[in-house]
Length: 393
Image (cartoon, rainbow, N blue to C red; front, side, top):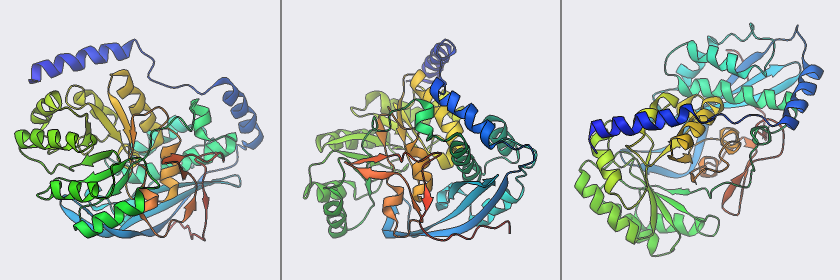
């Protein structure tokens, strides 16, 4: 598919969006509950107070993808307090995201919420936060998530209900098997196969077939694969995808370098499996240019600044006829619970981030029958399970 053809497809799709309604509205019952709760809690003299604390996630196993390995993931946890109500958020910071605990805290110090008297004015607040600096998407997500949690608690409902979603109408989450030795791969697969209905395999190197064969020696569960830009030759990638389909693989994430859109579009056109954008996709503004290049998009809160924009991305992609996936980084149940509020009706999910760590500091969404199911608690549905020392310093 050449550039002119892709441009035509994008233009046609965008025209269709103009006549569609990409935004989900809050249902009428939730609106009435919202108005009652806001009037009950709103105090014009109250101010929102943003605090944070760094936290290091300990992975249960060494995590290896195409390019690097790690055993920990740094995060920054946030809370926003308003009139005695507290909302929680999170910035997860894997190395490839380009943010650190220091950069997130530096950004958060610049966030001044004193000019906003009502936490439920989410559109205005997240627009202000986004305008403070470019990039810093995980830092922005940590504020967005805490704000949604706070507003939901004030309103008195979980967000999936306000979106009008069915929390059980969700795809099975994958469980990720990182690149490793045959012995470790089989061990991880055996641990996971009775809890999950689909596994995700990290590929993109010389051992891809070995990895798949090791998994197939112990389970016949459906698989997805994530190459993390690891394949560079389109013809070799296509041959690999045909082989993977024969092995029970059902989808492929980011097969080639993120900016090689011409080759990716040709690969997608010829591929027997759907091809999803991961590294090629960051925010809402990227979806337009990826129509006709990928079959679908993988939305991650840490890359798109949080729930507010993620919902818009979901609706835009669906309106453009693209498949949609909800993904994650290695995260606590705070960020995973936030994502669980808005992935109803999606095609795929990779929400195993909290299941990969040994020191989750929140209780929230739970694994049930291979799916991550949102809590019925208001907001994003989380409670801390240990003492967390938030501060402004």
